Image 1 (cartoon, rainbow, N blue to C red):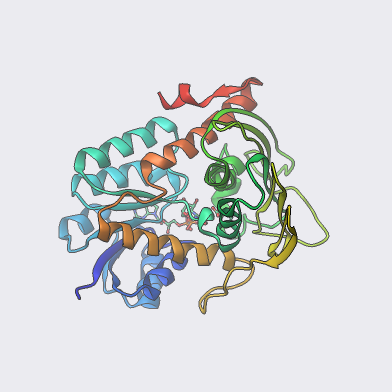
Image 2 (cartoon, protein in one colour):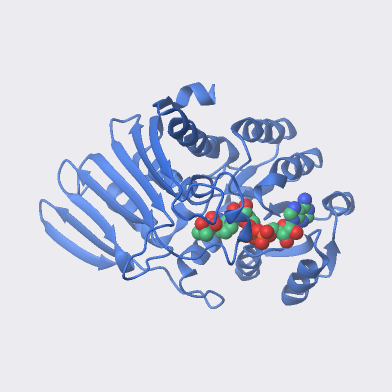
Length: 344
Ligand code: NAD
Ligand code: 89V
C-alpha cells in the first residue's frame, strides 16, 4: 500500500522526537523537511535520511508532493504556517501552544475549515500512558462520579538549557506547560466554565511566571485545581511527571511519583505502576513525553485515513487555549473569568 507522505517544518529541539515517531510508524514517510536554520536542516536531514530540504516553507509547499504537514516551530510562526498549509489544502498538525493569542487560534481554525482540511494540535500530554490509565479508571466507574480533582506538575528541572526561548517570553509556565495540564484537566473532568488563577515569578533570571495555581469550575459540577511550578526544589526531581488526585462518590484515585497509581473503591484498594514504555530512541526522563508523541502521531494517521476529526483538533484545542487565556486574565485582574465569553 502507498505510504502517507508527510513534511515537517521546524527541525529544532523537539522535532527530533517527532521525526523518530514518524520513522517508527508503518505506512508513513517524511519526504521533505524545512528549517530556516541551515545547520538544523543539515543535522535532521542527515540523521533521518531526508533529501528534500527547504529553508522556506513557501518553496516546500510550492513543490508539494506530501499528504500532510507537521509544524514543529515555536509559537510565533504557527498562524502563518497553518494558513499557508490551508492555502495549499494540506492537512496540518501544529505543535502547542496553538497560537500567541486566542484570536489567532480562532483564525487558524476558520482557515482550516474554509479549506476543508484537518487541523490537529500536537497536544500530547493526554496521550501519556499514566494519564490514559487514569482515564481508564474513571471510565470503569470504580470510584463513582468524580466531584473533585487535582492535576499537579511541580518541578525544579532546568528546562531553559534545552529550550532557551522559555526564559525570554513574557508568558512562561501557563503557556508552555500549564497548557498541557489544563488539557489533561479537560480530558479527565470535562470542559470548564470558569477560571480563577494566581501566578508568581520566583526565578529572577526569566521574564515570565514560573508558578501558577488555577481553580476550575467544570460544566458537570466537578471542581479542579491545576497547579504548575518550575520553582519547586524537591528531594527527588519528578520531571516530567504529572500527578493526579481524584475524589469520587465511591472512592479515590491517586497518581503519584514514579507513576504509582492507587485506586480505592468499595471493594478495596489496588496499587499498580503505570509507567510509560522506554522506546528505543527515547531517553529518561523524557521517555513519558516521547512515547506520547508516538501515540498522538498514530492517532493522527488513523483519523486522517478515516476522515474523522482528531481528539485534539483545532476546534477542541480552542477550549484548552481559552483556559490559558483565562488564567492570564484572572491573574492579572484578580477576577474569575467566564470561559464562554472568551469562546464567543
Ligand atoms: P526550537 O527553537 O528548538 O526549534 C524550532 C525550529 O523551528 C528552529 O530550528 C527554527 O529555526 C525553526 N523555525 C522557526 N520558524 C520557522 C519558519 N517560519 N520556517 C522554518 N523554520 C522555522 O524549538 P523547540 O523547543 O523544538 O519547540 C518547538 C515547538 O515544540 C514549540 O511550540 C514548543 O512549545 C513545542 N514543544 C512541545 C513539546 C511537547 O511535549 N508537545 C515539548 C517541547 C516543545
Ligand atoms: O512539553 C513541553 O511543552 C515542554 C516542557 C515539558 C519543557 O514544558 O516545553
